[in-house]
Length: 103
Image 1 (tube, rainbow, N blue to C red):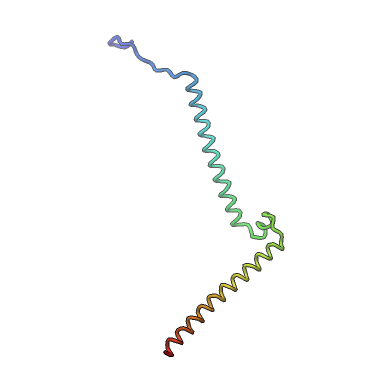
Image 2 (cartoon, rainbow, N blue to C red; image 1 turned 135 degrees about the vertical axis):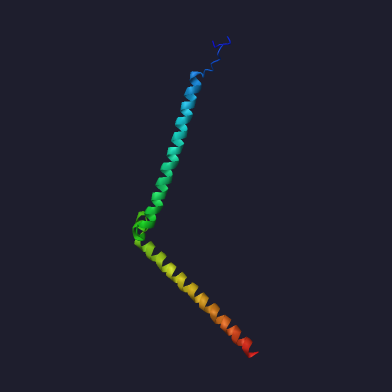
């Protein structure tokens, strides 16, 4: 009782609500932990793939040396084709300018 004779009201939390609260806190800590661990894992995996030389990564991915050679050859052919297309475009533009001068 306090000075003016009114009862003091005490709010009590039932035990099972407290247990639910603890379980919720535990679950949230688990989620935060999983997100941190997965972020660190994928960041380190990306960093690993960036730092480690490509042949080692290709080997880890299960590619044979023959597949790697074929991919490199295809990339070289594509690069030559793109350079040829640029040169051809420049040549066609030069021909068009020459025709304009003649007219």
